[in-house]
Image (cartoon, rainbow, N blue to C red; front, side, top):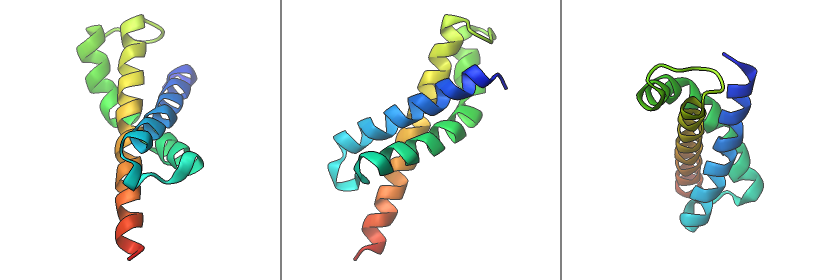
Amino acid sequence: MDPVQLVIQLASGALGGNVAGAVLKNFSLGTLGNSLAGIIGGGLGGQLLGPILGSALAGGATGLDPMAILGQVASGGVGGGVVMVVLGLLKKLLGR
């Protein structure tokens, strides 16, 4: 894995976590919590979804190809949003 791709995944995961927190306010963990959950989810989502989305968007291109970067951003953002929502749901359920 290229370190640049990992940074893209982590940054887009943080953004995805904060966007999901802004849209779903009842699951929000606060800015810091959303960012941390998003970073974790961005790394996980980038590793799991990155090869699928990257090859689908870029036709197998890797590295700093614009479509490969778009696949990394999409997979990191989706992963970050999903992990933030899951952790927000757990927090809400355990907080009762």
